[in-house]
Each structure stands twice: as C-alpha cells, then as structure tokens.
Length: 438
Image (cartoon, rainbow, N blue to C red; front, side, top):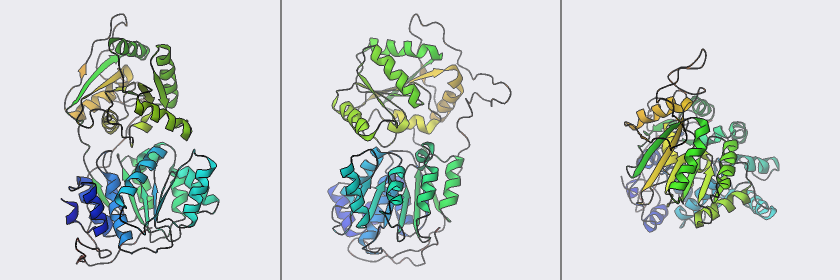
C-alpha cells in the first residue's frame, strides 16, 4: 500500500514525498489506520520494520489536523535508550518538516546542566511531542516541569527492552499522570508474558498487530563454533589473528562479560571499546563516534546496540554468548549486511547453550555451519542438548531462558475515529466513536 492511500494529512504526505517514502511496510500498513481511528494498539514486529513511522506518522497527522489542544503536551513517546530517543527525534524532524505549529523536545539523561534547562523550557512551554527515556522524564515530573493532564497519545517504543532494563515501575508511574482518555500505543519486538501483563495494565481493548519475525538476510554468512566457555577467548584470538578484522561488533549477554571481553581483546592489542548501559551519555557518545569514524575497530556491547542503532558498514557480528531467543539472534546479526553489503555472523556456542542454538536453527529452518575448533584448543562438546538434572528444565533450554510467546493476533473491530483528511483535503467517511482508554 502507498502512503497516499492512507488518510494522512497533506503536510505529512509532502514530507514523505521529499524523503522519497512511497510504499508502506507491513507494520505501517496495519498500524497507521488503527491509530488514526483512535484505537489503543500493541504492535509486535522486529527492529527495522518501520515501527517509528508506524506511530509517528498518524500521530503527527492528527496533530496537523488540529484534533489536539495547541497549548498542551499532546504526545509522550518513551524510549529505552538515549540512542533510540535521538533516532526517534531525528525521524520526527523529517516527518514534521512542514508542520510549523508542531513542536517537540527530546528528554534523555547523561547531559550537562544546559541540556536539562533546555528540556525544562520545552516541557513547561508545552511541546506537542515529548520523546524521553523513563528515568530522565521522571526527574522532570518530580520537579513539576511537565503537565500530562491533557496528553492525547502515550507511546511505548521497544517495550520489551524497557522491561528488560528494569523500567516497568517507571512506566507505570508515568502512566498514572495521564488522563483516562489517552490513546496508548505499544510496540515490542517480542511478546513474552511480562509484556502481555503490561499491555493488560495500560491498554484497554487494544488492537493487536503481530508480524512474524523475518529470517536473516541471505547475504549474511552464518557460522558457529561449538565450544566450552574456557575455549571462547582462544577462538577470538584465532579469528583476529586469521584476518585483520575491522568494523566488528561483539555481543555479550551481560555488562560484566562485556568488560571482561574488552579487557581480554585489549591485551591481544585489538583496537576495541565497550558499550553498555553503565556508561554515562558522554562516554557512550564518544565510543559510538569513534566506532562510526573508524577510530575503534571492534565494539564489544550488550544488546543495547542490537536495537535502534543504524551503522551500515558492519562487516562481522560475533555472538560471544548465544542470544536468548530467535528474535534477539535476528536483531543482533541484522547489524551486518546492510545497505547492499555482505556480512558475516559468528556464534560461539558453549555446551549449556546448545539447546538454545538448536531452537534458533529450528526457527531459521536450516543448520548453521559448524566450524572446527582452532588447533591447540582441545575437543569441542558434542552438539546435542545437555541432559538436565531435576528442576533444571528440559530440551536443552539453559537457565529457564525464553518463555511462551504470545500466539496469534487479532486485528479487532475497526471502529471509527476522528475524521481525517485524504490527499487533496477530502474527509474520511468512516463513522463511529473513539474507543475508551485507560
């Protein structure tokens, strides 16, 4: 479907024309009409499917149509990380290029006092759209800088990542400041039970749009080493001695592991840096800048980098630890082979992770090539699920990872909503009333 077939305002369509955006992605085609119709919505789709535009375009179109007050904060978008908040803000500037009466402010931590004062002024003046990380936004709420009593739209972007990072209580606290008429939109890459519970708490009668996770791009050459934990650094040493590797991201499962790997690579005289949520904003900005311009060859990171960071020339992704599930695997290795380039993805699979990796292969529909261990590292574990003792689960799942996913989706009944302009100024003929919201 083309964007000009939707009921977006003329100014939004003009901006999309300038940006050469013509065809909707599937998540945009499904979600934009539902948001325009006033429905609460939960969208489940992986990173890179166009979720930011799926909620920003209809919300900005409604603001352009004048359905919200001009002297209030009308939309709050919550982001799990500063990097994603910055990207949402950049997308906002492009989509709202012709919306002279729509203002926005990005609110995220780790900045100097001047930035905080700028955020305060934007909040107190009632910027139409606030894009914020939870901790920083609560700081402003506690200081009385933001009046959320007339907010029309509340958006949670990458809700699963926010919960993984411990922001559940913060989100619920912010939600208590919102009016009962607020339309709530939640996007998540996965649908574990904790997301279902949050959705039940925040969204009344939501439309659910769930898209299947895409397979990795064919251009990504995938391989794996089956090994013991104490063989992983030896494999890393072999990989970096074999080739002069640059533009590499190494993913690890914890901040502690990231620090350990980074120290070990530095001892191997590899030009690397670490990236995780314990770094303050200036440190994170500095590391990302050095990596983007090539001053750092290898970035060792937690999954904070797997979502929301666009770097087009990553040559290799190394999973030092097996991701928790198939979706995370796709997100991680999707950092390479972008912008029509080839890429490699290498996963180090220790014995306890074999069951997890078998589940990933089952999702992929094929076996990933297993590479022989480098000489001198000893024997590798047999590639089969490890038998569990009592109370330890089954099927090779390690430490209770994963969990049941939400099954199926329902598009819900299409209710009416605010009448929205067609291209050329015509109104929609849809009838009905806006649904009730918590």
